[in-house]
Image (tube, rainbow, N blue to C red):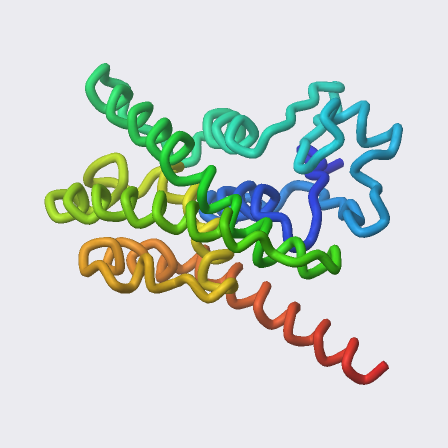
Length: 226
């Protein structure tokens, strides 16, 4: 029996956040169940039992323990299975880690998520992007990465010298920015670009990202042949 079941979806940056943590931790003892977002399966009675907001991802354990919200899942899994992605056990390291987590949530995730929704998700919904929302979000991201550029000139990763869960939290939404044509918010800043390269060149993360790209290319080719 697998250690737990992950319920997620293709193209879901929140699901990918959990998958990246599992890949970095070298953890394969889990079952991955896909939820078809296009069919609205996230709103099904079964999924609402796991995630009362009708979203993904969620995880369930054989003893019945269930958890939703990607960042909570990632932190729980990293703690439960002792992945080396959490701060050292001292007050200062923990405080800096928590501070970095809040920076990602408060100043990055909201504008990056808005761009992903407007320029990526809406394509699949046959809806036009709201360019006013996009431009406002881009201004917020520019302001965020200006600060990050200064911070990363004196440290390797977002929470300090070590690669942590905080860095993984950024990866799916930055991938989405690149997919939407806005990767220059990262690549135009020397220290931010170097940090991004360090993150995505980690062997486990690179392997998962390469596999996902290959799967997407194969799916697109199959769709074109129909």
